[in-house]
Amino acid sequence: MPSINIENGKRIEDLLEISHFTNSAHFLVSEHNLTRKTTLLNLRYMFNGDIAIDNLNNLYYSVEKINEMIDRIDDDFSKITKRIDAINAKLEQIYNDLGDDLDEFRKRIENIYNELKQADQDLYTYITNSITNEGNARKDADHQLQILIDKERSERIQNDTILENKIKEISNTILVRIEKLESGLNDEKTARENADANLQGQINIINNTLNNHGPRISSLETRMTNAEANITNNWNNLNGRVYALENRITISNMAPGSLENGKIWLQYF
Image (cartoon, rainbow, N blue to C red; front, side, top):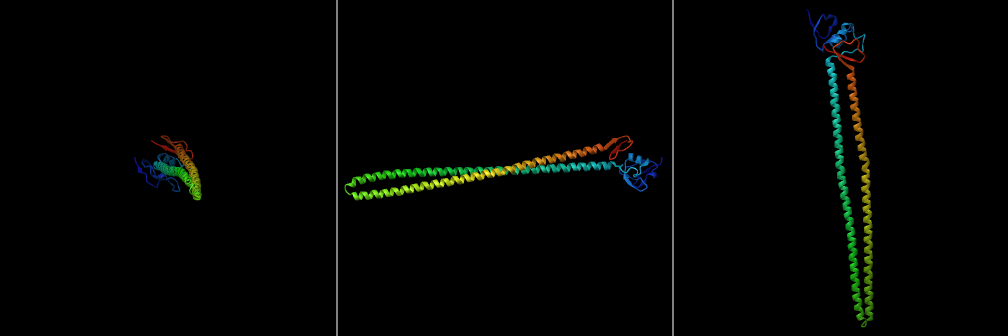
């Protein structure tokens, strides 16, 4: 029985008998020399009069073409998977970096607060000690004054004028010391009030700084939520496209009576 091998560009009417062919074979199937890759099933359609003009929507795909489409889909899956992994890595890095910054910032705030608290305690201790020392000094001055008064009283008989001058001198000295004491107390009071005001200002700055970081954290959470939603939507869309492609492909060992527009029929023997 005669046989020939199918070659690219061989006309259908010249093929007397087919005993060997490959999926990548090309055939000229019309008077316009249109070339299409074909399968054995589509080759039968060609013998029955389909010349690529009567049915322009009936496209023929070889096994290589189907494999090429599947490989392309696999590549798309791989690219999307890599993008998802990259996005997850970037989000994790952003979260870790921001978390480290917040921990460091919180430690700095705590250190500043502890330093301000210790400074206030030191100031209070200093004022307390100053008041105590001044009180002791005043008591000592009063005691010394009493001694001098007693002494002056004992000597009053001898010299009243000298006694009066001494009393005035001592009184003036006491008044000066009292004025210095009052001035010192006022200065300490003013210094403490200023320190309290500065402490309150620092606390207000800390509170404002903490409040300013709130929107940044909320914005980060919103961006993470949106990124997760976009990833989910893209994944669902890709699954839908794969599902739609599966619905277009039919595999059977029978030849179809008719082929719907957009359908792919794979026949095996």
